[in-house]
Image 1 (cartoon, rainbow, N blue to C red):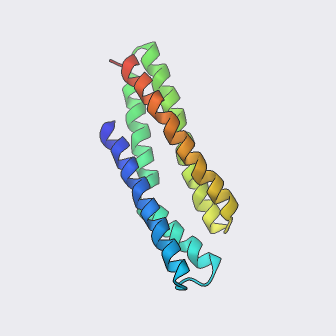
Image 2: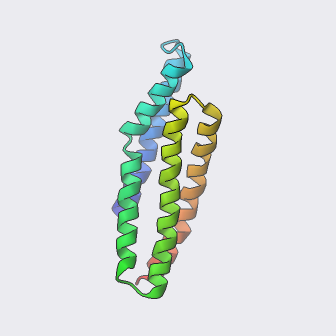
Length: 131
């Protein structure tokens, strides 16, 4: 699970770098419309492979709980639920970009941070429950 967790962090960093690059290109005048900026953001989100990394992590967490104790299964299910929420939020960010809805995009982007923060303690509970 640790490699997948690390890959998610790398994907978030790649997406953040892409956002920064898109903003710089917009400020330089390279982009003249919101659609161009949104397309750049969406390309960065897709190329970061964030959704794929989140899904791989979800599969790993689910497999940990399959053969475990009741407590292990419960901890796994809880973390899987958080990971699924994170993936849905990332998918919503894609839709926001397609719809040029910057307010919703910002809200969803903030929510990914909240979910990611909650995953840490849930992962610790999983590690203790599934020893």
